[in-house]
Length: 233
Length: 248
Image (cartoon, helix red, strand yellow):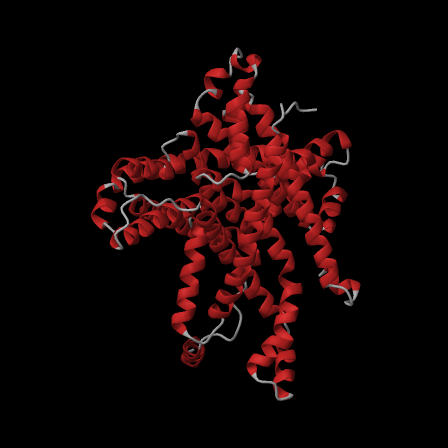
């Protein structure tokens, strides 16, 4: 098919880095999303406002700008601190940390809305019943709401994951050796941009398909025990 | 934060924002027309049409926009045939490559929105249109598309916002759009945080205004679906009418 001139393993290594970035961003993004969703549903006005600002900003600004902002922002912050403690050399920032932090925040902003919808989809009667049984608010949250949120939020989270998986390509711009950047190396050596970018595209497609299958499997698992009519809803 | 730098570079950033808006506007137009054909092909029962349309949507939605952009901008030059073709003066320019990539990308997403919207038009209406003797094209023009437009509008407004954000990738092929301008100025004065924050604020403003515009548009096309003002007439109205009858 495509002649990769021996660059295949390097590109696969890059794809592995892409997967690692996407999974790390998902892990932190889910935590952030859950936290901010609770903040946005809390009774504190300041908390709600803070949550609103976070989701509006992160969803209204291109991820590329957020990544660059994090990367350069962290560099100037770290170097300012280094200078203040008497370190004179230039300190470089780990592109993985800056890129993953930016993607986590983006994931979190989208996940916030998904979680909020999921919490609101839980029938209020269930929480009332839990409270009537004498559960504290926290216990009702942990035992009744939280276990169901996973099932309700899964389709939305799956979609965000697919978006973030593709956005990881942007981290190559701040120099992380993921699939896109490895492809650029290969292009630099072989002078065959079309072949290699097309190969990268197919690797991304393959990752997308695998991710979709995993999400489907997780959804089936999460919905087991429900009536089929409910499961599809 | 040096706010002075942010204000001083505002004119340049705004001219960059103009290019961003230009790219987005053109990509919306081209992408919408393309999407219409893709969506119709995707809905066709003829595998000769729907299989390529499915592949098109799958490819453009399943790969990063950056890869698509690089495939067009760097990739096409690999083929001597392309380089000697009359299209080369266009495909050599980052502007046209970015526009092409954005248009193709958004057309795939828009096609899926259109497909969903077209399928959401109640089957009975199409049958009714058939029964009144409308041709396929007439049904599409008079019954299906106007309603699909309304159903698809909220999802489409999301896609336009995503497109504004996606257009920032044009800066990776040296275009001086909003992000590109911010990055270029920052590379001179080395104040990336200030400039990128200013760019982010402009993006936010653009997207905020766009959301408002679409909300207005949604209201305009909602027509008969708007909740009708029901309830009892106002007290004062009753009183006057009573007063009027008494007067008579």
